[in-house]
Image (tube, rainbow, N blue to C red; front, side, top):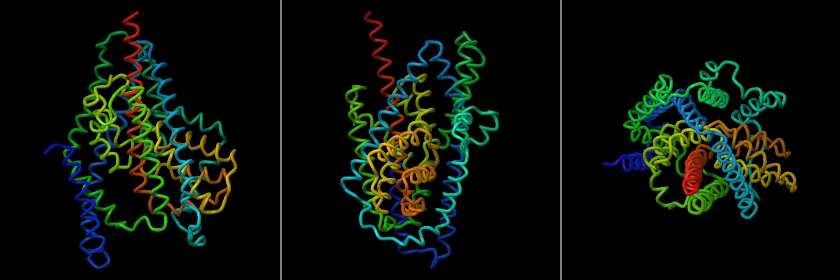
Length: 427
């Protein structure tokens, strides 16, 4: 059986098994189901640890190799500039979709909820505390923090907010290496490539466990939530999914067809395994190794471009997150009856785009930034508690769009580089 069928089978069986367990074998009446859930949690945790343990060496080796290759051909600035341009453009379109769909369908109007219970929600209180710690820093400290004081320490805390600093170090170091190493087969270049290939080998090993891990993670999600997890925010969740679908099929499809001159359907078919994996893990960073493999071996993109764009994009290009944040802020504004002015809506657009660029590529990484957005436009921060019940599902959806966006940009930049090369050849 082909890998994508195995992944899909694990996903479908996980959903069905979890829902059947939720309704017919609840843990409060069947104690053994707690052990079953723990077993599936163990399988999923082992799988994710196998992935996460190679993310740091993979980021370092991929970025350094990519920057070195681009630096030698003086193409680093062009690739980085085009990547940033596409990131801002696609993220801006995503937030505009969020604003238009939310204003048309008004999912927050007339929603009834217990404000007192919401304000005392422990998860909400924890988010507010984390936001207070972040906003206490002066503005310039955010820029200073982009430069790691100790790259080794940043590597150790990569999944605690230091991954951007680690990437900045890799970018600088890769550029510096490109200026001092002239030989193609330099021992350091071969060593970095060996590290990259070793990381991919571990990923290949982990993928044998993927169908079982996907089954376990999806089973636990469905078993804990059931089919009625959307509750009274089902309309809100539907609007988020609608916006994500418009960005995925219409916007990405347009850019693939017009700019990259490739069939969107063929592109999505080639990436179907990756999208299912991204949906299940809800983590751009965990999906990065498979994104690199898909880009190089399935889509046949130039490694020097795909390694740079995808590695940076795992944190810097978060179209789905930007769209989600835009819908959420406007939804909560409608819930609380806050009429946002045109200037405030523009602020939501700008901050959602910037927040999408800087959001950590880990599950739930966007929630603290939404709280910051809420406070900026005068919406009670405790409103975030309304969406916590559906955030896991929506996180899975928006991560899929984030990962797709990274590959789309890599494809667009590669197409531009191909056109530039053919133009020079004709001259």
